[in-house]
Image (tube, rainbow, N blue to C red; front, side, top):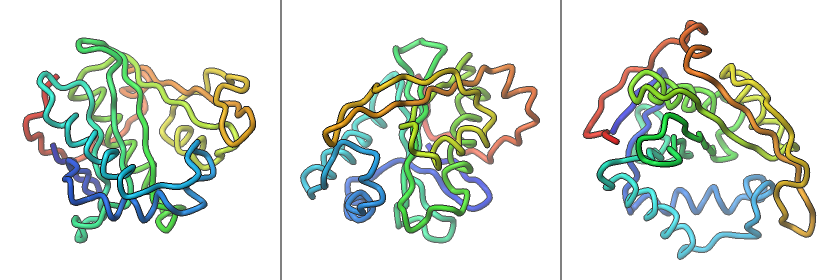
Length: 194
């Protein structure tokens, strides 16, 4: 599967992508809202390997793609994906992350918009939802820019780094996407099936 936006290419992960992922997942700015204190080569090889395995599942229900800049498709700067709860489900969770060196460029919004378009326009899902740590204002802003609605705050939903963290839950329905006038990304589908 391959999705092209104005500035990005979202593509399947390859095993050799792990060094780029390790580089950004080792950044303290990235680690702030994760339970990890640090990342190792072994951790990240398994992380990338999981996405490679997901891409080979038949039928497919998880689509986690590497984010690259157009013209520099070899360097992974993040990932974004749609994960159905069960095969045949009409509801999916979206998740994304961007290397801190590429924050504040709108890349997370651009990638997530493409994946939401894939979820509603190609997979014909009914609902897409996401959570983020409430203090992660940047992630919450991405969801708001996408037109997702804040559906609630889960108090101390996550426990890591010796404290409880509240989480926001956001959601969007297919008719909200359709009425929003969102432009579909240019998409080349290479065997994406569920």
